Length: 450
Image (spheres, helix red, strand yellow):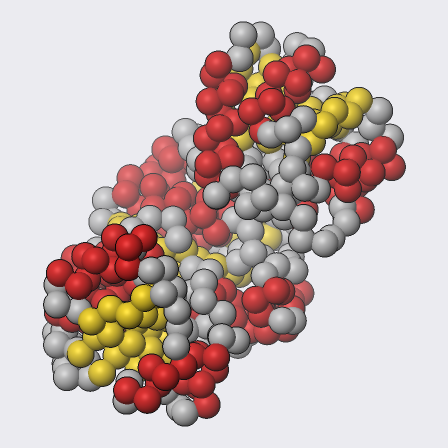
């Protein structure tokens, strides 16, 4: 960890706990700041708050009182999930109090360089592939962000010989100033989180922030198949490194003559790549570019790509039962992700879908339903998805109570050679605390299937 004196004797408010808030508060306390933590959950239901009190940190729980701003704070470190629209944050910004996220703090203390990955879809898969390839290539990677350990906790222990591979959300990127990844990756941009950002333009600019502090010595890897992404990439001063599944990009990563290539060099034969799906080809090309720029050998890249079959809950192969293959794609919390998953399979598919109703219809899913022979729905959006399925010509439709009941129902419609795919196209919060819980229950039901 770098010696940082910028926070010594500064009054800092850490807003929101969870893992990132606990890590940020503890770190700032070590750096000599006068830390106050504010979290909405009451102390009696808040073991993290109790832990911080034991460290001698002041904790205020139960609400986000606007009166806190009268205490003279010089900085706020905000949990990414807390919107900027709440009175406490709005008031702080009106008073000129800087508001950052824990990722910015991690960068300031880190001796290790960063590879930062953002985008609407594919972040976790791309991050994981890069981490695995760098580890195979003996490049001392550490994984952080939404996928792994909290960024500041990783940075605190990292050395200059390590590389921190970090998945970054738009929420986190809204709170950065100095954060400068040596390699930045923007996988793609689609409509998402507009309830938080307000407009797609604001959402896109949050994503583009990953490259705003980069210099001519850095690299910005981007999806050259999307015009909007190309425009965002150009906002960075870094060396531009495109990737494309549709055309040859001699200054980046691409597919040609059955090979995945980088800057004119054949890296791996496409048929050897274990991870299915056209959308995953994009993720892999981005990972290849980052790995080659990090000095990893083709042998290390091929070793991982021939074995890597997916991240848990992201088009994850679960099991084959009587020649039916089950896949867990619980992370598909929007239509775009579910459509990409469906296009990954050419044969007959039984789709399990449904979840939280955010007010949208599912007409955009219809073109991806051409190989779906049966649909099993659950959750609030079941009627809407069923309507889209009927419009797509699907006649076998069954509604069940939850994802556990969906598994035997789906099997009952299946035949040898079929794919049974959980790809809900919706968030899980109507029935499950997280998409991980939903995916775990699906997998457990598959393993119990008789």
